[in-house]
Image (cartoon, rainbow, N blue to C red; front, side, top):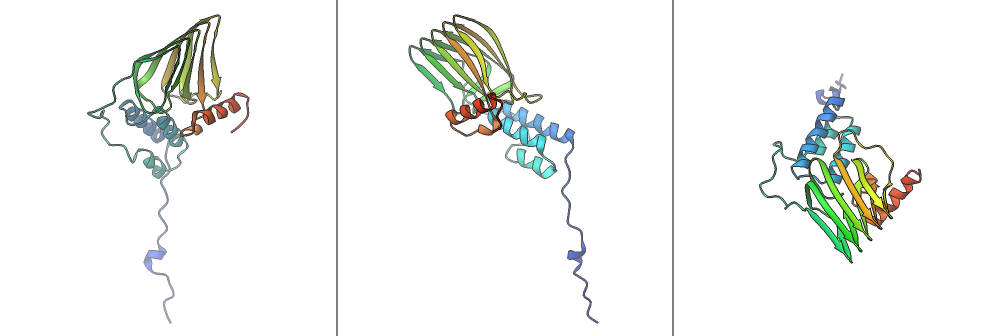
Length: 217
């Protein structure tokens, strides 16, 4: 009688994926934050990967998030020069894309407008201070909605406002502290949904307004 049993390789149970624990998720987010501080991840990339890390169920899903990062967390030998000033006088200043910020940065808009998009910026450390001044002009600052934002300062014959998504910030996310001072002008801080990464600013702002009205994306 022929032996109809399957070969030994077919009798072995399939390897099951290893489930990730909360502490392992937290450790991956810490590693991502350290690599971001070293300039390997932009602000938006950090927040996107952190989101996936907290929702990862297995070790394999976590491993994907750090696969393109070196094991040693050391700053690259060559890095972008730190940007300190954004100035718009009787004109416009638009800054987007990848640039480096560290410690504090100053924006000045005098009878003009500043647009500062931080989504693709490299932010050193856990806190960035933005000193924003607007005189008969305006400044718009854009950040991912998962970072912590604190708006301070005052306005005279103008207005400072926080717009966009009302979602709570991620625990342990970088802090963006904005000291806003306006005279006959205004400074708006836009919290853009993390899902809008890579989309044009106009489209991301439209999504932020939708969340501001309490509607889901």
